[in-house]
Length: 493
Image (cartoon, rainbow, N blue to C red):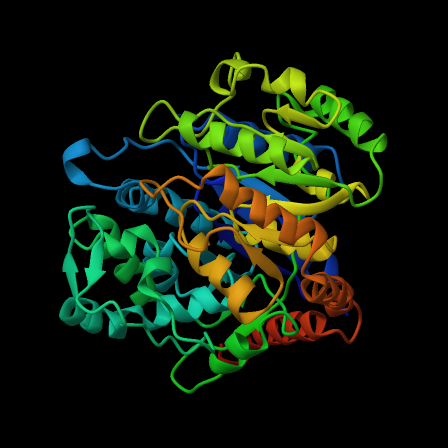
C-alpha cells in the first residue's frame, strides 16, 4: 500500500529572527516524518538585502539537495504608503496583508497536485488565516518566541482594559502607570510583571503598533494549534498555564536552531568567520565574553563608548560585534567603514591583545566555541535558545521587540542569566561603564548557581529532542493531529 503523503505550507514574517526558525522547523518536521513535505512561501522586502540573500540561498540549497522543503518566492507587491502606518509593525502587517491574493493562488496551485494538510502562519502573518479559511485548509500558528510571551499575547486583549484604566501617556511617548507600585499579572509568568518590561509597541498606545499587537493576538485563537519554539523543561510554568480550555492546543517542539549559521550565505561569512575563530582558538577555555545585539540590534555612539570603557576597565577578554545603526526607518543595521572613529581614542590599540571588535559575526558558531565564557545579549529568543544549547550564561541587555520580557523571564523566573538591564530600549538612559563592568564580573566570575543551572539546562535541551524526549513527543502529537485530521476529512468524503 502506498504511503500517504502530506504537504504543509509555511509563511513567515520577512525578518531573519522569524524566517530562520520557520525554515528550520520545516526541515525538522519533514526529517522526523517522511510522509511530510513542506513549501515555504517567501515574501521579498527590497529594503532588506540580507534577508533576501538568505532566502535566495535557501532556494539554491534546495535545488542541490534531497531536502523535502521547497520554496516559492511570491510576486512582489506595492508597499504601504507612509500615510497608512505609524510603526514598523504597522508597515510589516499591511505589507504582508497585500500578499493574500498571491498566497491564495500559490496554495491553490499546490492543492491541485497534492494534499495540503496544513498551513502554518507566524506571529505577524495572521491575516493569512483568512486564506486558510477560504480554502478550507487547517491553519496552525508557528510561534518563534517563548511560551511566556505567547501567554502575554493571548492575555493582551484582557490586559488592554487595565492599561487603559491604570496608565497615562508620558512625555517619553510611552505610557506610564499612574501608581509606581502597579504590576501586571500574566498567567504565563509566575511573578508579576513590572510595566517597564512590556514591548515598546504596547507602551506606545497612541501608535498603530499597539493596534496591530492586539489584532494579531486576537487571531491566534482562530488556529487549530500553536507550535512554540521552546521545550517543557525550560518553561514548565508557562507551558502548563497554556493548557486551559478555550485555547488551541500548544505544542512545544524546541529548541529548533540553525546550527550551520550564516557563513554559507552572508557576504562577509567565510573570511570574517575564519579570522574570528582563529582568534578564539588562541584564548583559554571560558575566558571570553561575547557581546552581540542581534540581526536588528545596534547602539549609538555614546553607548558604544561606555561599553568600550567598561570592557577595558573589566580586563576580560572580549569579542564585540558592533553594528552601525540603520540609515532608514525600514533598514537593518549595517557595517561601520571605520569603527575606530566611534570608539574612545586608542581603545583598539590598548585592547589589541585582549579583545577583538568586529562587525557582523556568526553568532551560533561563536557560542559553540569553548573559549566563550559569557554572552552579553539582546535576549532575542533565538539567541537565548542558542546560549542554552551551548551552555553559555547570559547577561541581559534587551533592545527591541519582546526582549525586555525575555530578559525578565531569564533572570527573575528561570535563574539562567544575570542582569545588566531588564528594561533597556531605544531612548533609555545610557548603560554606563560601571554598570556594564559590574554585570561582566557577575557573569564571568560570580553567580555559580546561574552557571550550574545553565549547564543543567544545556543537557535538558538536548534530551528534549531525543526519542521519548518532551519535544519529540510533542512533535509526534502534532503530526498525529495533522494526519488524523486529513484522514478524517477523507473518510467524510
